[in-house]
Length: 113
Length: 112
Image (cartoon, rainbow over all chains, first blue to last red; front, side, top):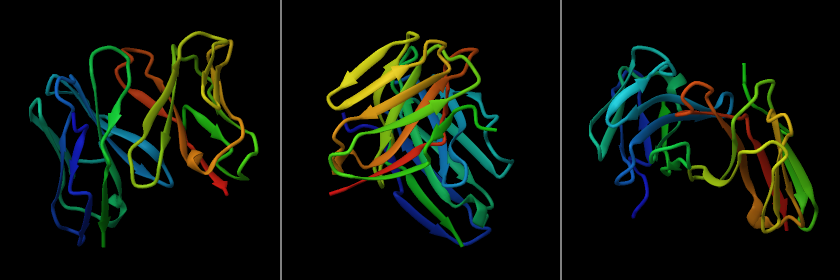
C-alpha cells in the first residue's frame, strides 16, 4: 500500500484565493482526519470522518474552511477565501476500526501571501 | 489550553548522551501514544501504552506510562543523529476515543 497520499505537497497562493487540499486514505480505513500544524499551536484536529460521514468539525476555525469526503478513497479540505494566518502544514491521516494507529500523509505546506 | 504538555520544548544533545522527555496532563487517559515526526514528513507511531505503570522498550527507547495514567515519559539511551525529530504524545478523547489530542511536542536534535 502506498500509504496516505496528499496533494499538492506545497501550495503558495495569494490572500483571497481559493485553496483545495486533497487526500487519499489507506484503502480499507474507516476514519479520516484533517489536522493543521503550526509552530504556535502545534498539531490541531480540524475535522474527522467515519465511513465518509463528518463526525466532528468543531476544530474547523471558521466558515472559510470546509471539508468533504464524497467516497471512501478521497477527501478534500477547502479554504475560501484564504488568509495569511492560514499558512501552515495540513495533514491528512487515516485509521482502521478501533483505537489504533493513525497513519499520516506527508502533509501539504500552505503559504498564503 | 493544551491538554497534554510536553517538556522540554527543545532539546539539543551530543551523540551518545541519554535524555528523557515528558508528557503531562491533569486528565486521566485510557492510553497514550508516542509519535516521531521527521522534517517534511507526517508523524509516525512509535508505541502505545495502555496500563498504568506500564514500561515498553523499543531498542534504545523506553516508554513509561504513569501509575495514575496522567503522564508518560520517553527515555532515549545513547542518542544517535537518526533520533533527531519532533516527538509527540497523544491521548484519546474520553468520550468515544475516536480522536486524539496531541501534545505540544519536543523537538530533539542529536549532534554528531
